[in-house]
Structures are given as structure tokens and as C-alpha cells.
Length: 409
Ligand code: UDP
Image (tube, rainbow, N blue to C red; front, side, top):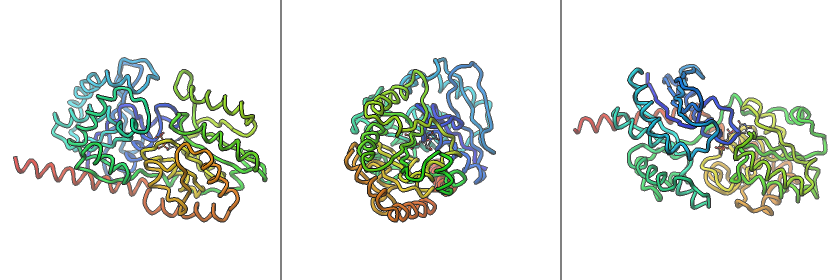
């Protein structure tokens, strides 16, 4: 049995996603761990514990534990504050490991955990596999202000040399090569959970959400973050509402004193200014098991992000056979193939959004055909089960090449 140490500093696998600080990474770690365990692995996920003083361990799926290590920090801090806490996390983790059975390898998530994991892997002579979740140089190129940019770039450069880096799509793969000179690359996509994401009866779902027969439903699922393009979607909705009876459901949570609260306020102000209060529904965060109802009811799921490294929401919507309009960016442009299983629009292009959404609203046959093609495609390639089998192959290759290296010493 393989024993895997996952290090996901700020990605607790049990967190409800859809808030600042809890999104795709949390889902990825949870579902990958769960499905690795069904392939016979034992997975321990090490993460931070904000508040409290004791290390705690919890089994979150059969064969998977999360071990939370307390850091002396206030709750709900931005990720950038973690940079100063990395040596503390490393020391506490190293102490803890002396009481744990030996692991076969480390799989780290995001550059902060990568910093810690490179040091642990060297000390314990273990292979390191790393998933970036997002890349600093790419974010800067996309116009984001990046805290700790210098430290992040150099950590990501080291990770590209000292670990097997997992690229989740061809686009990320080429960025890792071109921007970071990565050589040991493995291409393993993200996945979706078929137990949660499958088409449900559309009429029943619509009724349960309170939609009337003539109302057309647009759906957004994700965190309130300027990168997600919600403001642009609101502007597109205002234009569409001139020709259609529209309802836009925004699924995603908001916490007080957080950056998602600030973005929520920006969106809400615009909704009120444009007179869309009766059209836009702020649903709040929904657990994964409850999301298929929304995807199945939607006439169009819109993913108007400025940038996505992968974009799990696209997979989930396609798995529910929802027609998808997404931005032509990052992983979205790999998962969604324009005209084949969805429609792509340039990021920030409000008239483009209006046009693409209108195509689906005007042509239900097209919507149904592309939605069906989307489900077939994601079932073929992207279940977490198949992702986990591919990841096990990556682990085996990393273990084999370490055996070879050891033999050459
Ligand atoms: N999500 C959720 N409930 C919500 C909103 C989002 O469970 O109310 C989940 C969503 O289903 C997806 C994840 O959060 O699995 C978001 O991942 P994605 O890669 O789309 O975006 P990220 O948050 O990583 O930017």
C-alpha cells in the first residue's frame, strides 16, 4: 500500500468551497485523496489550523485523514500572510513526522506548500510531486497584483526543477515549460465527481428553484472574486433582459470582512444601479451534492473568468449536460471546445457574452446538442477515478526514477 503525504497549507479538504480561500484546490485535494484511497493508497493531508493550539486529526473519507497544524495567526487572513509562517509550519510538520509511519512520497499543492515540501522531501529523501493550482508569472501577465511575487517566482522556479510537476492541461504544460523551464512534467487533468454531477430532470429542478415556465435561467457558480467576471456577466444580463425574461442565479458564498464581501458589494451595487434586483438571485454557497439541481435547471451556465488555471465549474456543468459559455482563457479553453461542447468568448467581452448566451437561448437544439456532447466528453476523460489512476502512474514513475537515481549513487 502506498502512503502519501499531501501538503496543502491552505486547502483543507473538508472546507465548503465557494468562499474566499476555499475553492477548486480544496475540492481537488479532497476528491483526489478519496479516489487514491479507493485505489488502495493511504493519504494524509497536512493543512493549517487557524485558531487553537493542538494538532488535530480527522478521517474525512475511508483511508484519508486531514491533520491540522496550528499556526499562531488570526482566522480569515489573506494567503499572503502565510509566507512568514512557512518556517513555523515546516518545523512543526517535521517534528510531527517523527511520530508517523514513513511515507512513500509527498504531493504538494500551491507554491506555499511547495516551499515547505521541497525542504521536507530533501530531508526525508522522498520524491516530490507538485500541483501548482495557479502560477505567479501567469497571474502577473494577466494583470493581477501579486503579494510576495519575488518569493513566489523563485519558489515556483525551484519546484519546476526539483519536483515532478503536474500540469492539468496543455496550456499549463506549455507555461510551465516556457516560463519556468520545467522538465519533469506529467499531464493529469482535474476531475469531477459523478456521484454529485449528473443531469437531473430539468423541469423538476426548475420548479424546485421557483422558476416560472417562461423564465430563462442563467447560472454562475464560484467565489466572489473580480477575476471571475461577475460584473461583466451582470452587464450582459442587463442587455439580455431587454429581449428575454431572464433570471440569473449567482451561487457562491460571502463572509463578513473578507475579499468576497468586497466583490459581493461591488456586484450588488451594480445590480441595483441597473435595476436588476428582481432578476439576479444571490443564492449563497451550496454544497457539491446540491449543485446538480442548479446546473440541470440552467439554460446556460456562464463562466466569464478573466483567468482559470483549470476551472472545475466547467467540468461540473458539462457533466450535468448544461450548455456552457466560458471565457477563452487558461484551462477553460482546453475543456470547452468552441462549437463542439460549449461556446467560448474572450475574457471581459460583454457583447460577446450577450451574443453567445443568446445563441443558446434562441436555439434550444444547439443547447441540447452541445450539452450532451459535453457530458459524453467529460465522462470519457475527467472522472476523479480516472484522474486518480493517472496520478498513481505518475507516483510510480517518480518512485521508479528515484530507485534508479539511488542505484547510480
Ligand atoms: N463550489 C461549491 N459551492 C459553491 C460554489 C463553488 O462547492 O457554492 C465549488 C465548485 O463546485 C467547484 C469549486 O468550488 O468545484 C470552484 O472551483 P473552480 O476551479 O471553478 O474555481 P476556483 O475556486 O479554484 O477559482
